[in-house]
Image (cartoon, rainbow, N blue to C red; front, top):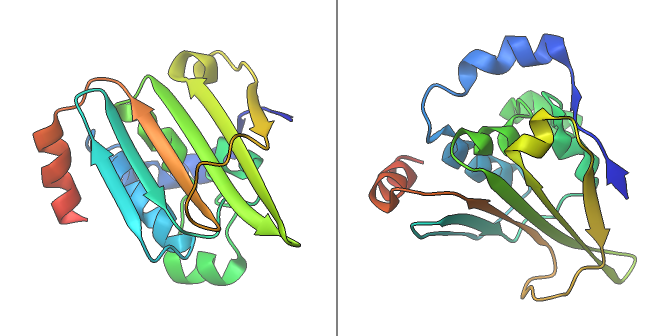
Length: 165
């Protein structure tokens, strides 16, 4: 599957003040996405090089949705109750140079696993993002999402920000 980044400019401009106020905004955004996906467990790990959030939510139904800025892909009931802005994956680029997304879910008794890896430069240059279907199943839960951000992280700053979420 080949997908490209899209932009709903009106929503982007309207929602921009909510985000990017500080470099740690990505943490809140990614935790909110886990919550909106119905996760009952969220695991966050951080080293000097990698920040990773893994949840047991329902997984990403259509990977294209996370690459359309200011379009959340959420059901209308969630949109009205939770006010998603559709900025989660892009907020990651406040601190990360590379992002990897793994998502898995079960549909009609079949486990569907997808993987995407992309860089900030790739996004800014408008290059396509390739999603690998049926990646290796190393996930303990029936459904969920794992997002890893690669760069240099101040672990103490991340731990402090996580306490505020």
